[in-house]
Length: 68
Image (cartoon, rainbow, N blue to C red; front, side, top):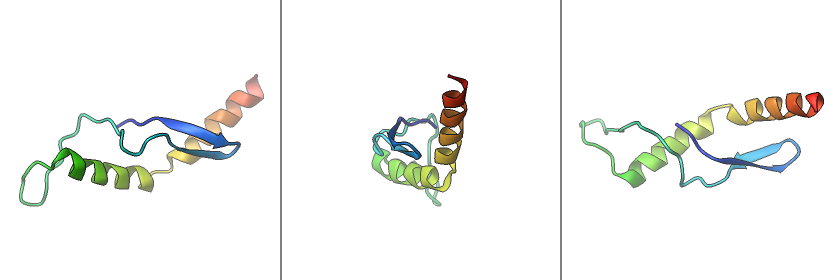
């Protein structure tokens, strides 16, 4: 999974476009049917929002700032 993010201000990063999560995953429902792109996008966004990716991005930005 991948998505673009932007830094809105120091300490604040967000998804650049919540509709542009990229993945090679094929999601299925409990019945085994493949989800539509829109259904998959909704699920992928839920996953992204459960991850602590923003903290990690901020950590890397801070390390790079100190190194510069």
